[in-house]
Image 1 (tube, helix red, strand yellow):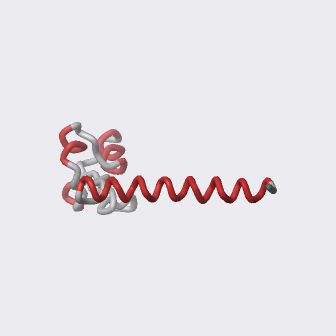
Image 2 (tube, rainbow, N blue to C red; image 1 turned 30 degrees about the vertical axis):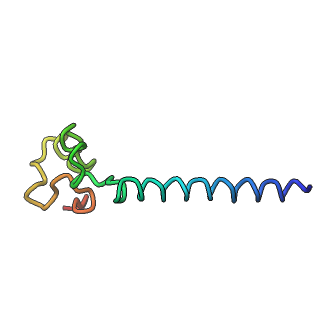
Length: 80
């Protein structure tokens, strides 16, 4: 069996494994994994914030909540 065929089969197998794993996660939990800071209650409970919001607070700038950033990284804008 050629070496390139083994590499291709291993990579197809790895991709299939991860697709099946993600599909099972969605089927068992009934929803996608919530990785957005603004909607994940556990992240909010632990005090995890958006990187832009955290850097603004560290530099002494005002909190960016008035700009619409409430821990939601997609709402934060570095330029503002």
